Image 1: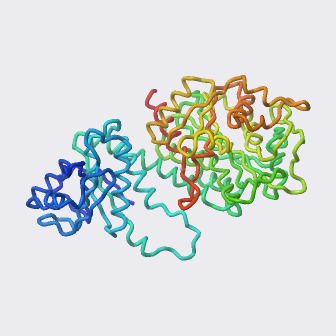
Image 2 (image 1 turned 90 degrees about the vertical axis):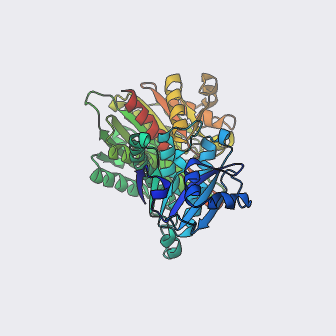
Image 3 (image 1 turned 90 degrees about the horizontal axis):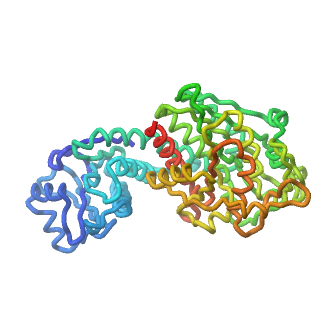
Length: 498
């Protein structure tokens, strides 16, 4: 889709569809009033007849409005003017884009961005509009042999975002950033939606190598023998039940000074998780192809950061393998030795994400990082705690927690901080090893984070549990691309602070 920023008056705008707002009590927005005057009060007469009252997210498509040089005029409900906030704006934008896409209009001019949002500035409005437009046209069924030609032919191809002249520069910058982030989100979605027989650890490694060819990213792939030399016994224990070879993927974006310590992102890359010997129930097990969404989000962020040429050093590390119940698979009760030298009693082979992450978290010490953030679909317990709206955030660093929370708010990709108190650590006690890999049902997402914290003593660290936010189930099943927007806003804020 082609996007452009303009400040054209409604009467001079040429597009197949022009989109204007209507507040409750049938009050036309300023741009709507201009069109109403041009059309000899045609719009206000339609509203007076009761066809639309301006409720948030309601729409009314008009054709061949008198004296208007557009085939269609779409009226979109904005709700009460004094209550027009982020939620109302997003509802109006999504409703508008869905309606326009249904018409077959090849182009549209959107005047909703000129409306004042009580808690959202112009940059936020532009970004969210770009995200919504691209999400609306995203296709999850890319492996279908029969394409929906009718839907493709009707898809909106050009969207003009109308802003006031004073906001043009801010809007252009926001659009550039939004398109780069959206490309990262799409990459993460695409990888997540692929089945496990295609998106294997080797496939993920190939995608990283391709990014290194498309952008100035340095890529290194560590093989099984490399991991054996490093002593990654925990990661290799998970991989030993699969015929797919494990990979440790390292991507580097060097946008800062050589002396600048990098931000390191570690993404869980279990390309299919059966639970291993602790086999998962069969219902919805197909969704365990999404257990590599942490890895996918790291690749998405690396792509977006490289496209925007962010002036900082960034390293993405992805431990990747499958978790399957082969005859060689790790068993409940087995004890493995991690790269850190600490021993782990594997009480449940379905708690495998932390077993591959702990070795990756030890590996990244060599980068002398400014901070490390791991991203993983780690626990079902996090879904029970937070549902599907917020990612779980764990860190003992209050300043880092605040940065990530603010980034999530700015990106409309929120995270909620949960405790990481030492009180929970004793749940990981083992009679036979330095620790167990699970701490029981109580506080499951917290004890998982506590487990990871034992491997992060040498740097500043945060953990994002995205088990509830990385994909949707049911009728809208598909990857979300989260938390690429949150992480990109976190990095952009760091760049701005410099």
